[in-house]
Length: 230
Image 1 (tube, helix red, strand yellow):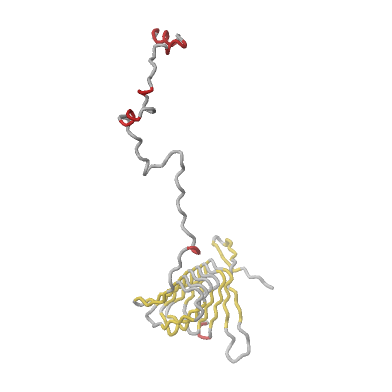
Image 2 (image 1 turned 180 degrees about the vertical axis):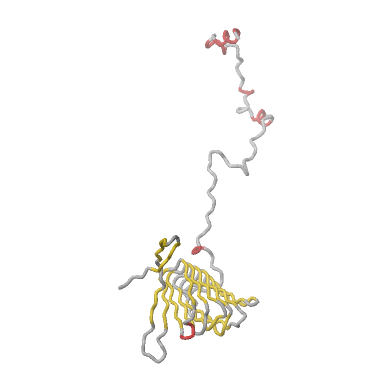
């Protein structure tokens, strides 16, 4: 260790014993030396992420409005009618259904659909501004996430299910007054009752309640409809 410190204490004289390198021995000035260099080139960074660059952001999925819209389709597959991707067709789309056939309507905007004869059931999903005229159904009509919805029932429909519907008008006929309506997360839903037979009364508009009051009574949760008078 004393010999090492003695060398360091020489100051500028510590480099006096070094040999000066000739230009012919410098690899950056002699191409022949570079060609014979044993130092391998830096491996390709393909497939790895450079530390100096941040990774490319992942591509976000395009919103529904920017996606390529699929062509409209009206087709019978087995016992199921499929009605899809109609956008303001300008005319009434009619389906002649049978009692053992169900109907699925999806992604139809500003479209009028008329279902002739008695069908089994109807499901409506993600439609905007859809109007449908129904004769009769064996079971139910189910509507999900379809704002500005309108329904006219001419015959008998036992059950109407509404889920996440914002703005709907339901026209009932004399034969469909026994229809049961189930609503969940719905707003601005109105049921239009026909005038009594033999009278000059107008159609009666009945709003479906949206506000519920819940309270505890005798250890039980009780829920009541909040009615607004006037």
